[in-house]
Image: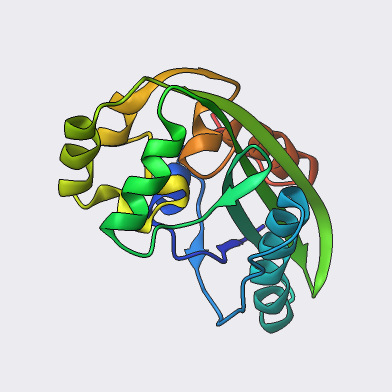
Amino acid sequence: MNLILASKSPRRKALLEQFRIPFSVEVLPTREVEHGEPLDVSRANAAGKAVPVSQVHPDFLVLGADTIVTLDGRILGKPKDAKDAQVMLTLLSGREHEVTTSVALCQGGRILKSFSETTLVQFRVLDHAQIAGYIATKEPLDKAGGYGIQGFGGLLVKSIKGCYYNVVGLPMPSLAEHLRALGMEVFPLT
């Protein structure tokens, strides 16, 4: 079974490559949902990425995913600029927040399987200099919640409860189970 990743996220691409899951990438223009209940937003965006690509390539399995960061039920999207990143990181300082990734696996314009996974992330208490230093790396500007755990942002994290890969952008253990259930072997054949 051939897999298409309907995402331009370099982190999702790197995770699939890390686990040697063969795939190609195709992204079609979509309009992302930005407001609503966090889980509904994430699910709608994952499906919105995958379904159109699966209509163009009906014989392929298409993976769409969307990761959101929420604090007190409020979605923290990608910061618009450095000032917005500072506000987000200040809000997250010393607090626990949720990172939820929703995944839609589609074929022929239909969702075969969708699931979501949430990881709790506890941030360290950050001072102004730490926040400014992290923003200076420019790393937070293209990431939900204003940080990436797989980079310098990992230094901001005190602990996590749940799947690390989910915080990066794809809950790989759960994804592997669902791919296997759909007939795609994820372990190299011996």
